[in-house]
Image (cartoon, rainbow, N blue to C red; front, side):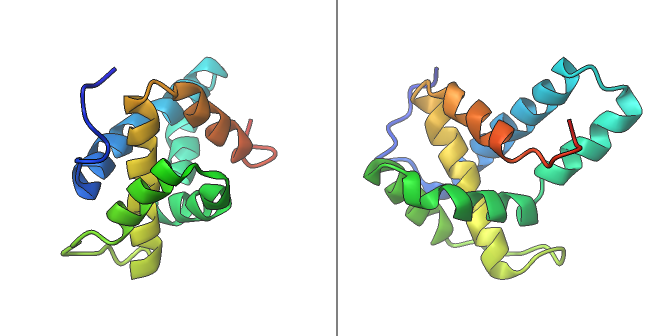
Length: 127
């Protein structure tokens, strides 16, 4: 996949990569389901935002290996300079940690974990 050492990588660059990987995974999922274009964006927005990512992060944190917990801690505690008004500071930090985890899974070639997380967090009636 990508040649990045997770132990040396900063939390924010990982989150930057993970943001793109997560959005692509979510978009792929709904396109595969055959949704029309006007419904796609609505469904994607439900999962690609700080509040949703914070909820997902909290639900998977306990099941992570120590290597991934370290990545999440580093990202969550990064020196984030600005925060959107659409969520709390803690939600944004947790979303940043989640995005860094997604990048770590991607870098380690564990894209199946990303897909499983996505499938586990699709709201009923959303499919």
